[in-house]
Image 1 (cartoon, rainbow, N blue to C red):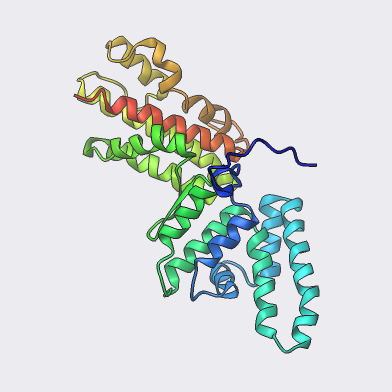
Image 2: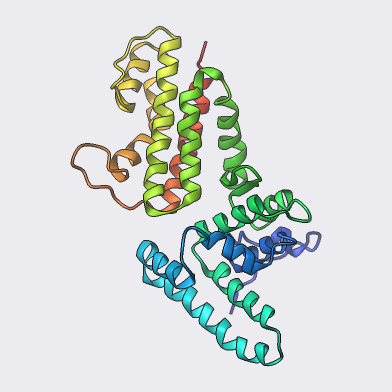
Length: 299
């Protein structure tokens, strides 16, 4: 039995509902925005030049994500196929194909779903632009992504992270002097969006590189020498010794560096470790805070 919290009678259900994330309901809402792109076309556009067919894609899911996600998707597809016999008996083959494609789209790994939606928007001539509607759905369902026609889904964090960390960081890296830091920060967001085990490790690495880049720019602009090979902790020492940054800001500025060293396989001969999605998101948010802070210290 579900325990209900006291509902506010002045607010609607959607406003008070806990965040759902990219669950099946949210995915279905997003697919509904793709007017003019049937679900089988969305799936086929995702598979094209990547996988020979759904079976080949299923093997890829099993190899990358493990047995459980592949089994869930295959079970959903099997149920859809079993239901097709009744639909086809009535001559509605097109509807049967849509149900099968829908099952794969609703149960595929989330990064693949985001990629399929972006591919559909990018390749199809849709009756109406779904960009604003997709972002609106994400906000209403508590999904920490926004959608653009040029880049697809971009991680922005929850409402608090977006306001206090991501938006200030994105504004900060517009400074031409921070071009290098921006390239790393953009790469971290792109790798996070891909969401594979390899790309999540790379996102953590790029987040730390963005902070290192910002520290190097700050040192250069303040006339403090450093070795180009210096990594995050050494660069921070230079900032402290030059009295640009107080030592007590270490945990704020270097928050992205330690996870990179521990989880990104940083260092010769050290095997990389898997990085959960939540760690990659936390690291990029920490990098955003650090980059915003360092930018404010530029002369």
